[in-house]
Image (cartoon, rainbow, N blue to C red; front, side, top):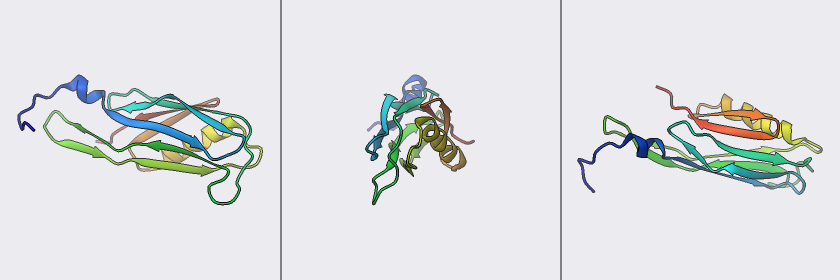
Length: 132
């Protein structure tokens, strides 16, 4: 590794968390429509569909969204290590996908992690928002 690598803002802003999602519900599903949440502001997104069967035993009747660990360099040469995050929420019987998107939005926005979410209909977009 070279200690004097030049800082490349385009390369660093393109780095980010891989977004994955999985449904543990028999009826409500999720698909990842944009799989990367970048430092430069590109949002990752998921889309929920179907009415939920709801909470069962264990993880049955839950929905999960994962943001991977990543790191990037800042212009001053420091490296920021961003922790991964797994958000799993229970679903209620008959829960509509719009409610699932709103529940994730509320949970993500109320946490102290450097991510912000916006739900529009059945879609949820997540952006990286580092606090200064």
